[in-house]
Image (cartoon, rainbow, N blue to C red; front, top):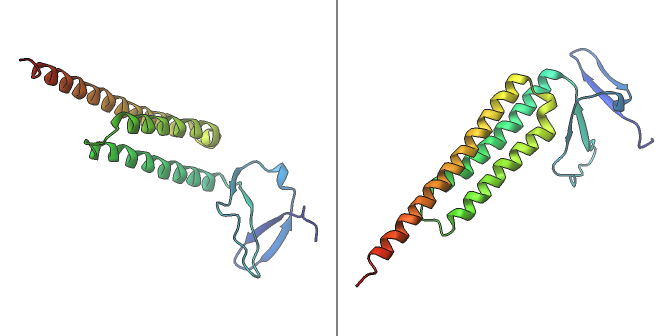
Length: 157
């Protein structure tokens, strides 16, 4: 059996057939496995899948975006929950970098699979996250300036 043989598995209620095709001619959403070291006995190892069903692609992209957005919100929530953080500026910069990385990843990976409405909503969400991080940075900067002023006022003889 040659290594360049590709399969399409079609699952229907009464038919079970395997159809050969040239997968390079299909355009769709590419997925690769996260853990490539899994070797199961009597199983098919899948390195890459191309999803061509548009509704399924939309659902997968939405799920990936939502899980990533949830992680970003968790990072921001942890910044708000720890006001006594030793290095709040460092954690804010890390959060801002994560938001920017998320934005670049969405543009590079998922924009071609999203509708204009989805793109607009995602851009709004990212903008809100960026605003929250910058507002928190301004707030912490004001608090530190006030603390320095109070310290210098109390220092006099």
